[in-house]
Image 1 (tube, rainbow, N blue to C red):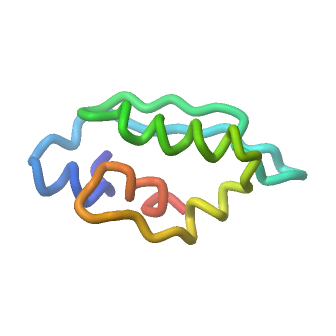
Image 2 (cartoon, rainbow, N blue to C red; image 1 turned 60 degrees about the vertical axis):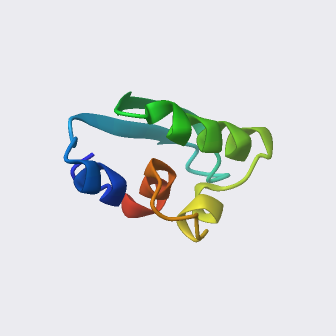
Length: 76
């Protein structure tokens, strides 16, 4: 969470994010987000999973700032 802009702004960088990605399809198979407002990130990951999008679709997307959701692009 120390690379998440919103977490840095709020001063709460405790926690982590991990995702499991299929090497062939590049689709997100699952994720764990432990941190403040982690549910916000999980909602976006869930939509990407439901849409069977490759993780790069999230990595290249522009999200409304400042949200924890933008962290999906920080770890790419």
